[in-house]
Amino acid sequence: MEMPLSFYVKKMCPNDIDASKKLKECEKVVMKLKFEEAIAVPEHQRRPITDSIDFHSIDVEPQYSGARIEGDVVTLDFVKKMMDDFKNQKCLHKRYAFQIVLQTREMLKALPSLVDINVPDGKHFTVCGILVYHIFVQTKSRTPEKNLCT
Image (cartoon, rainbow, N blue to C red; front, side, top):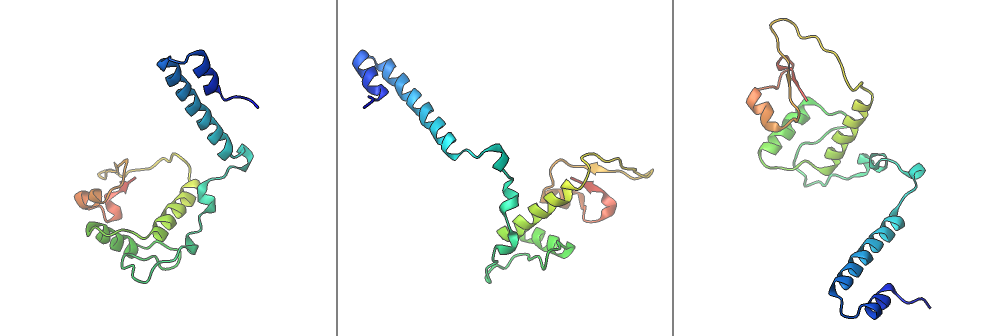
């Protein structure tokens, strides 16, 4: 039977506090490596988490009173209701959050990463890095003419 490393450290350096601390650090690293190895998935078997989420299978409780997506299409009415809900500190149901994220991901995957745009004379185009509700409120960007882009 093989003796644990701690046995040898204590035998060789019985009163060395520094050796005991270093042994504990090494044991933590070894445990971390063993854990990572145990949960590792081979590269060829890895797939995005988005491939395993089916938002259709998530039930919306009858008592949920927030914005609802009817069918698979996010409508302007839904977005307006969702914005009003957020303004009133209400949460979006996780089914709809997943649906928005997954459908947006699919839509963006089909688009090029960069696009050229033409801005007519006398018009302007505002680019915002993060779309937050208060941007809509501050810029009154609820119409396409305002050209708010995220």
